[in-house]
Image (cartoon, rainbow, N blue to C red; front, side, top):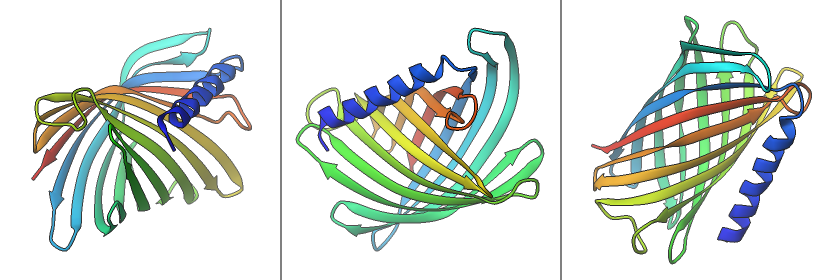
Length: 230
């Protein structure tokens, strides 16, 4: 898939989001900071530990009432182990614990990643599945596909002291009992490589779901991602 194909996918997502607005849609806006600790191990293994939280700042209905208030939503704590299995591919699996409304849910994660390297950018395909279990809800199984691209803003590669752009588009199929839902995510980020072991990324994380069988729900999260190699 080339750059034109990626831009076409992004355009389709934006059109879907725009058409969904004309229904009785709801929205929410907040912040979503995260801390990622990455460690390279022997035999092509690596570990990623991540802590991420969401705080809500505003919610309401499109062209309707809105509520401006701060509210803590949830915290995710995850640990993922990955192994390189080819020149440009790796498999990974792990566990995520979600703390929300005083309840803990458990998620098991598996994914496979293929990276295509071009002269001026990289294109990554992630095929993922996860299973979530909690006491208050029925088990949820999700099947996901994400395509992402990282483009350096100086030269052909990202070096310390340089900015880069990362764009991802993801489709998440959710199965819970007899219910099915599709969530679409579009995440454009601006990153800065501070050192070889430290970088930050920020930008909007847009999510659209519940538009197949009910009123669309839009979520806008302003992200701040910190990455440390240890």
